[in-house]
Structures are given as C-alpha cells and as structure tokens.
Image (tube, rainbow, N blue to C red; front, side, top):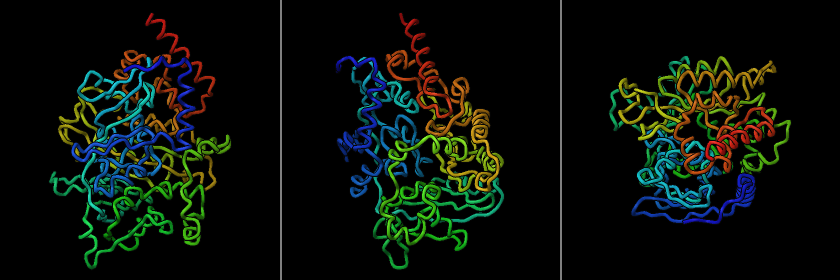
Length: 473
C-alpha cells in the first residue's frame, strides 16, 4: 500500500505531530487483543499503563512490561525496553511479532522476522525511529495470575559478593529451570548492602490464604517502593503478595528514586496522604518545561545512565561505578541477549556459546541492565564533580567490556565511538535500502545528548545526507 509522497521537512513535521499527540494523548489505540493467537496489536503511543489496565483483568500481559506507566510502545520498540521478566523473554524487542511501518517514500509495509522485510524488523530496535514511521505493532502476550508473590532477601558484603548474590538469585548454578523465578530485580543501596527480589505469579486463592501478607503498593499514600524494599535490610527476609498490575508499575510514583531529588519531601507520610495522588509529574511535561539551567544540571551534576553488559562483568561494573560516580541506589535487572539470525546494533559477545557462564544458554547470553539514576556522591557532599568527563570514562569502559548504553542516556560519545559501541552494518544497509537517508535523521545525531549544539547536529546530518545522495545518483 502506498501513501502520498512525504514532504522534504518530514522530520520536523513528525516531531511536531509526535509532541502534540503525546501531550494530548491522542492516536494511542489498543487495536486488538487476540486471546487465541496471544497477540496484542497496538498503536505506538499506547502506554504501558494503558495496556496493562486492559490486559491484566483478563489474566494476560505483555511478556515484558516496563515499569513506568507513561512509557510508550513506540519508544520501547524504537529504543529499548526491559523488565524483571527479561531474564526469560529478553528485551522488549524480542517479544515483537510484527511491525507496521511507513517508509520514506510513503509506502506502508509489515515487517516480521521471516518475511521479505525481516531485515527492517531486526533493524528497527535501537534505531530511534530513523528508518521509518512506526504505526502499529503486534506483540506477544502471556498468561498471568492475579498476584505476584515477592520475596525480599537482604545481603551484605563487598560489591563482588553482592554481584554474585544477584546472579544466584535468578540463575541457579546447577541450571535447574524450576528454580528460575518469574521476575527478578535487585537494588544495591550502599557499597556493602543490597536487597534481592524474586517474584512468582500467584493466584488470588493462594494470596488470600490465612497468614499471607497482601500489600497493595499502588495506593497513593503507600511508601515509595524502593524505600519499602530497603526495610528488608533491618527486618530481614520477608514475603508478601502484591496485586500483579501494581507490581508491574511499582516504580511509577517515585520514578524509581528520582522523585526524591525533584520533590525531597514527597516521600513524607503527610505529603503522601494529602498529595501522593498527584505523583508522578508527566515526564513529557518535565522535558518541555526544562530550562537551560536544569538541562546543564542534569548533564554536569546528575547521572541518568543504563548500562547493558554481560552478567559476568557486573562485579567489575559496580566497582567502576563506585570509584567514578558513587551513585546509590543502583538498579540491577537481568536480560537475555539472543543470538539472532542477523547481527543487530546490540549483540552477544562473539563465541559466548563456546564458554557458557552462569545464566548463559546456547541461544542467548545473560546480560544485565545496571541503572544509575541520581546525584553522585561528590555532588551531594559539595565536592567537585565533572559529569561530562565521568560519562566519557563510563562509555570508554563500556566499549572495552562489550557493553551498550541506551540512547536516552546522557552521552559524550563521538560518532566514531558510537559505532564502536554499536554495530552499524544492518542499520546502514536498511537506511539506504529503504530510502531513509535524507528523510530521517541518522540515529547518532538524533539521540546525541552531549553539549553539541543544534547547529552542529544539523550541519553534520546535512553532510551525511548530501554524501549519500551523491552516491545514490
């Protein structure tokens, strides 16, 4: 099917449309929930909260439900998404069945992993919408139960010992699949303390048995989840049952723990009772109203980073982060990185299947997302901290250790180093094959978050477009 030719200023036009529709919440429809095929067909602006509100009462859910309510399907596909079930199902993109995409020439195609557009299907994740305009997606559903039986297990030791406790929480050393939990999440609160959480789906009948503790954490007046989990350090290991949808979105009210910086008294009992219903503020609104001073603060004196790296490198990463940034809490979430038919922008370590480590299988290497979101220790103590240089060293460390940096993170990567971190071959082939060059911005320049000016970005993109146009003609 073909549409009218897209205008030359498509990038600006689409940006305006996406901004307006995101703010107004329009064009975000759940098109179909197919219980027989176990597929959800949705438009890209559907949010995690919107979809879980429909599916969970049906005892259905996406295989990977990212934690924050406002995260959109389109963002999770064009970028990346993860959740505590990713140690089983992989990243959000690994749960896709098909993608409906408008190409630069106005044609609409449906890409799947085994049709004529399979290259586009594998290239779109991590491309940030620079190959085409996503208009709908079919995504895998799974059967779930009404509650999550969550076990909170505290541990103490050095960072290497905490990293091993984390790996043992979801990847049994004997390889017994019966010991693998449905959900995994760990929080490192200090260099010597962490809480390791594992969840199993549970029926309402089980949860309501006499003696079981039910905790509806979704109420506005409840303690923020990361602070509730921290109580395991003093009370010891405990188990409770949480309504499944409330568990999925456990970090929404406090945006993990960023709300503690945005609104320092937001976690106080009196505020939670009186105004807790108003949290969190819309992330899109925070971005739109962000002034230069706030942008500079987030760049220079604050850390917003996720690091995707092999599980066997987690201990080294924790040591590196403590030395370079000293940010706590730290979020740990495992995920499989599958060995795919083609090499995509992110990929397992070459030859990992010849030397399987804890959590690995012949078809997937176990990775971990290390989430680092807060003000660094030196900043909190009033000491000098060079945020740009710290991020630069972090990125060099990731490149050396086969790690990947999600593109929403603040980045100091040069274009050369960006393509040292990510593999460009499939992406660049699709850029040319599907006419994206000159219509959609290159992914490096679209996601660049350093101090490069807008003029520098536009000039570099124009030069790339002119070169590709000359080569084509």
